[in-house]
Length: 123
Image 1 (cartoon, rainbow, N blue to C red):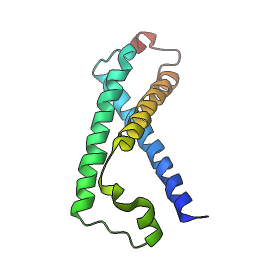
Image 2: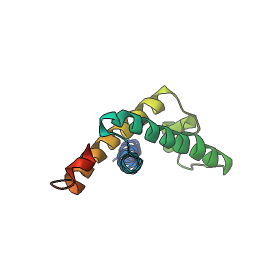
Image 3: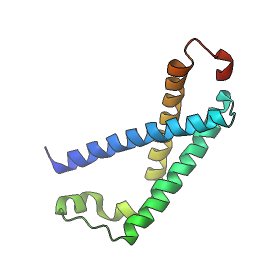
Image 4: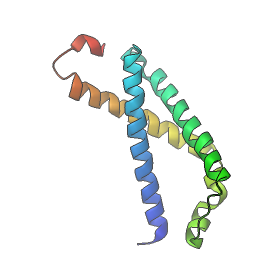
């Protein structure tokens, strides 16, 4: 299997895990502060904003400051300098992943925790 395919696959898996975990945490916090579930896009937006600040700004600065270096030439050619910068593609993918994770977490919470009890909490 080519290393490029492995990189793309691991990137998609990492995004999916990030989206689900950040979506779950954001949805729990949104419910805790009393957010109306009809206004879930507001909670998803603030979850995405926290994710974006953490991942794209804070973590990229840390990686750049510690001097992250990659020794494999194929990986360097595939990633390039894009690892330390962000563009509209990064923003669009992160919005889709976090909003999808938030909505999926909302469904998981409803079906696991509020299945046949506490129906008034879901509103």
